[in-house]
Image (cartoon, rainbow, N blue to C red; front, side, top):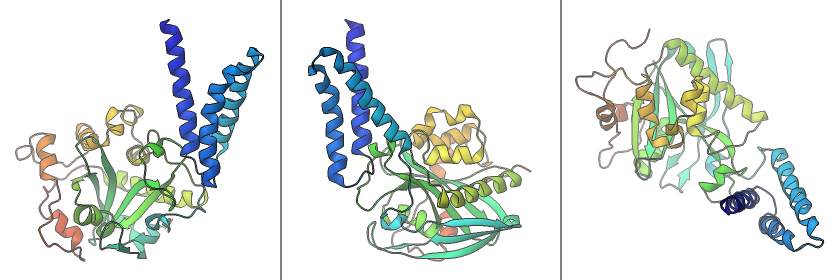
Length: 332
C-alpha cells in the first residue's frame, strides 16, 4: 500500500511539474499556453479510461516524451518585449588593460514603477580596480535576499553588477516561474545610484554592504569573468533558474568557488550568503575586537539613509560613510 501511494505521489508531482512548465512557459499566444497547461494533466489523468486498457501507459509515455523534447529544445531568446528595466542590455569587452562597458544603467526613480530611463558608456582601467563589495538586500525576513557585487575603482567610481531575471512586459514577477523556462538570465550592469539606490531610497529594503577580502589578481579575474558573461549573452542567451542559475550561484560560478560551497544550503536561502562568505574568510578583514563574529559585522554593515536623503553624485561615498572599514592590509 505504501509503495502504491508513493508511486501515486511521484506521478502527481511529475504532472504538476509538467503543467507548471507549460503554464510558466513563454509560448504565445497566451491562450495556447494556458490551453496546453490544462491539456497535459487532463491527458495524463484521462488516459486511464482509454480502451483497450493497455493504451493508457503508451499514451502517457508519448505525452511525457513530447513535453520533455519540447522543454529541452525550448531556446532562450533576446528578442522579446521586455519590461523597461531590462529592455536595454549592457555589453562589455576588454582592450588591453581597459574595459569598455556599453549601456551602464542609471535610472532616476520617482517611485518603484515611475522612473526616467538613462544609460551611459564608460571605460574602466583594470589597474585601478581596488575593491569588490558584496551587497545583500532584504525585502522580507532574514531568509531570502537579493545578492550582487559592486566593483570599486581608485578614481572613486563603482560599477554594480546584478544577476537577475529578465522579465517580459506581459508577465508579472513570479518566484515560482523562476523554476521553469520563464525568464532569461540578465546582468544588470548599473551605476550604484540606480542598482543600490532603488533599494535603499525607493523600495526601503534593508541593504547591507560588505568589503570582500580578495587578492588583486582575484578581483581582476572576477571582474573579467563578469565582463565575459555580459558579452556572451548578447549572442548566446541562457535561461535563468532559481535553483541552478540564480543571483547567488552566478556569483559563485564567476568566482570559481568549490563545488561544496556552490551546493551549500545558504546558496538557496540567499539571506545567509554573507554569513557563508564570512565563514569562508572572504569578508573584511574587520577588527575582531570591534566586530567579534559575523553578527556584529552584519549589524554594522547595514546602509542607513537619513531622512530626506537624495540620491546624488556623492551617493557611493555617502552610503559607505557609516560602514565599518576593513582593517589591516587584506590579502596581498
